[in-house]
Length: 175
Image (cartoon, rainbow, N blue to C red; front, side, top):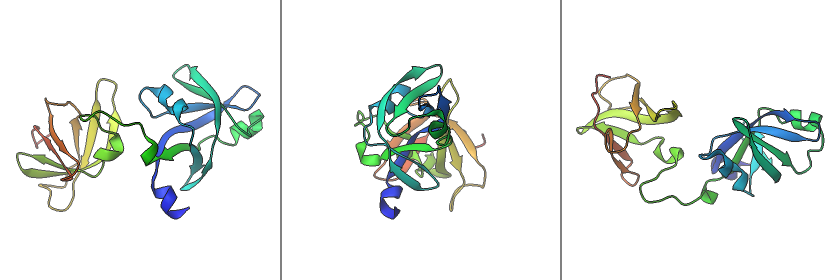
């Protein structure tokens, strides 16, 4: 486990069984959600314990996905996977354009506003209208507040520099 587990990124979660032939329901964290079905090197697990998973086939269903997994042949086996995460190796992710980023790349970046440290990106959340950076205070930040900053490129988020571990925003620090 150890080192390999630290390089995995969760891309979805099994939410239950679908039908009686071993299919599972999946909540995909990818955008678009169908991208999850394109990975052939998935792992399934929870609490840091993962094992290989082979997606035999899958398709969109409602607001999520359904999939048939190798060696999962009935509803009981599928139901036993409820709550398990689906993960892939970070280096297997699709290559993005220069100005695109995966959320995991933004997590941990320092957030600066006019040179003043507001905190670090703890995580991002999707609100429907736009994504939001959840910025938590860190050593050296202006105060101990948590801030929710909209992910609006050019309007609010001005500079993303992964090499320098920083993200610059145009945001009122009192919010």
